[in-house]
Length: 332
Ligand SMILES: O=C(O)CCC(=O)C(=O)O
Image 1 (cartoon, rainbow, N blue to C red):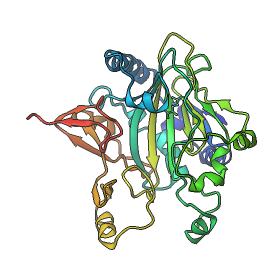
Image 2: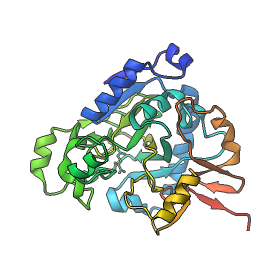
Image 3: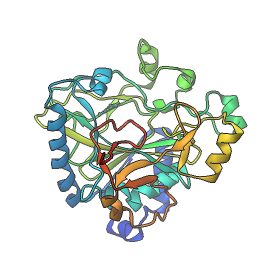
């Protein structure tokens, strides 16, 4: 499905109801849906050169990044600048984008990841994988919790194209519909290796081509992989990931067994989330306070932007996978 947002949609601050329902249905069946006309040319022209500059910084030492070592040469998880003027409302607090998130994940869904997937020229193929686990591990568990089987996504990935993402620039390979393969629900690995039967069942694969300014809304359980970029320019695809209000772990996972003490804290304060090491802590993303004005418009779709603004320097290039999504440099 490919819908193009109209001036009337922008005026209304939402996609039309019937379009939202169609997007939700398409994500449930196909695993992804495309909406054009969401991110302005002005924003794209500001962000693209900043990302190319950051790619040069990351590339300067000639070492492979940890993500490349883990997944494939040339595929960067690149932190995005989290300070003015690089944080833009039509990217980070876009009402039309948020209308889709609310439709798919429900009220109080929260932003959990804000990053760039950059595919550099000369890149290799990644192993085929999925990004998120099933939130319910069996039909019985899902049904006891009032969910269908296969269960719906509890995380939505929004992939934003700053320039046209094409076959030549390394559009992601995808297996539409594969998010419905319940066999993986209990897997401890997210990689599809040595299972030609599953690839045969859900193939042949397609490619996630995205026009400039469009957003591909994707169930992150759909199987996919980065593939070679045969052009001479890095392909910048921004990734905003939202989690349903049920996601109680800071990485957006749904943890079913929570101690009474932890639950009492989570109920009292929506900035808190369960941590990897146990217990609860601040689960918000860190942005510099200069970026506040980009979030001035309250979400009319009940989306929690989940941001902790700080005055200290925010270094977006240091481990976007850490809690807070960046590194705060204190003056001392
Ligand atoms: O950038 C892409 O095309 C896909 C990247 C990806 O799936 C990953 O890095 O895990």
